[in-house]
Amino acid sequence: MRNIAGRARGKAALLLTGLTLLALFITLTSTFADTSINSRSMYPSETVKPQNLQAGSDNAPDRYSLLPLLKRPPEQNVFRVCDGVDTGRSFLQADRNVKHTAPEGKSVLSREHPVGKSYWLPALEIVGFEAALNGASRLAFPHKTTDAGKKTYSSNPSTFWDHLTEGPWRADNDNFKVNQLGHPYQGAIYQNIARSTGLGFWESMGYTFMGSFLWEMAGETSNPSLNDQVASGIAGNFLGEPLFRMASLLLEGHEQPGFWRELGAAVISPPTGFNRLVFGEHFDAVFPSHNPATFWRLDLGANINTHHSGPDTGDLQHNGALAAFSMDYGLPGKPGYHYTRAFDYFHFEARAATNYTESLGILGTRGLLFGTDYDVGDTCRGIWGLYGTYDYTWANPVRVSTTGVALGTTSQWWLSQRVALQGTALAGLGYGAGGDISGSSERNYHYAGTAQGLLDLRLIIGDLAMLDFRGNQYYISDVVATAPKGSETVTRVDLGFAVRVYDRQAVALQYQFFHRDTHYRGIENQNQEMGVLSLVYTFLSDKGFGTVEWRDSSAR
Image 1 (tube, rainbow, N blue to C red):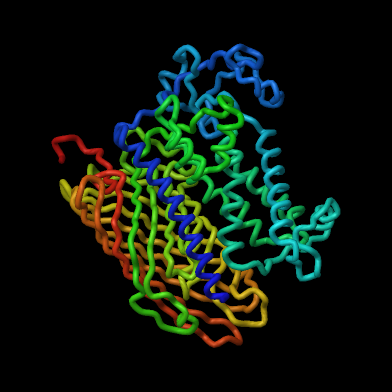
Image 2: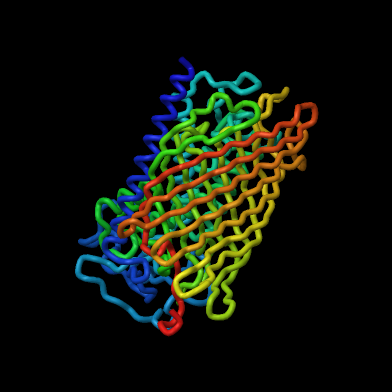
């Protein structure tokens, strides 16, 4: 019965994931139905004085009178903001002093000159969200207790003081999915609350970190958790920023986004949808993408486990349904696009399958925190610098999740007139968890400092086909490690070949290989591996598989 219930929950989770991916696909498709990637309109960066927004005016919504912390007189509604940090330049800087008059009854809005930017509101919303989360958890898990026998969510003011003054900080024993998937998403909510109220990436990072700290102090009666602080307070930023930017991309380029765009943005970033709905034009300003080169793909299909070896793999389901979504934002080479803000380049991926151990088996992001672009002759354009990374993988027998920073580069080479090679290479350090360990500890996985590397390549043959290769390796060390002491190495290799069959649609054959090698004291070493073969139907954002064109016509 337990297995049946577990499978039912897994199928329900897969259905929810599939519906989310479908909503994302519909809204993204509507973007490209109206305009292509290379010609998407964007909000100009001219200084704009929004009109008729003063509380009490005939055209202002009545609810503004309820927000004294957010009200500003019209003369203060002139901004030039770049991600919350003045970079010393604005996009289309020569035009920054040009004033535009909005059509009667409307205002021209963009995040370059937000009508609303609040430091108080995100703090209040984060506290309110945590209070609601604590209350919901009390109702959903009334009998859950800590190691000391206290009810986990029965916190009170003395809980905050005890945790603040006495601690002690430790690694908790919650299950792998809660700690490495649930907490990063919780942090992403904090981050998106701050971003959707007009704050920049680095300002929002402070709110995310302090929101996580507040939860560790007052959200639960268990001792504050170091791993949760990293997962929510740091990984939450690296997951939240791509979600916020994808939601903003759906809304950008249209004065009045339609219902499906608003719904899609709310699904991707709930705080963005909430603040746009509740506070109206005060936070209607859309974050300006500056028209990046983007490429996304949605895969729907089936897979089969081709082989597996090692212990704890006998309960695998061999066949399953598959849904996957990935997006590259800010691919190098786009003329006029500059990397002045954190995550002006990022990669996002989510992969769900019914025959993974958990339905949502893979979730990951990587984004450029600090860096610049470069070129090599006329055929190569790239970026390099420091990236922030978050990875979550649970595909039996592999469990690994890390939060880290890495040095690396992303580039595109034109190998011939129609053949291009895109790639990313990263090497970095972080903190994370992995393994499936049977030992004396209540936690059946291992926390420690990590080292990791990535090589991701895509060979694009015109508008006909693309060949993908990706290799990840994670070393989970015994540095700042939890019991049992030891280390393990996890390797993931992806191969894919896609052929375009019609317009922006393709069929693809994919193969994933996972390998795990463990060395723990007092525990027999394990060597496990699994291979998964998938056949999928792929929906693409453009016929060129994401190639970026900067060459003049004579070189093509």
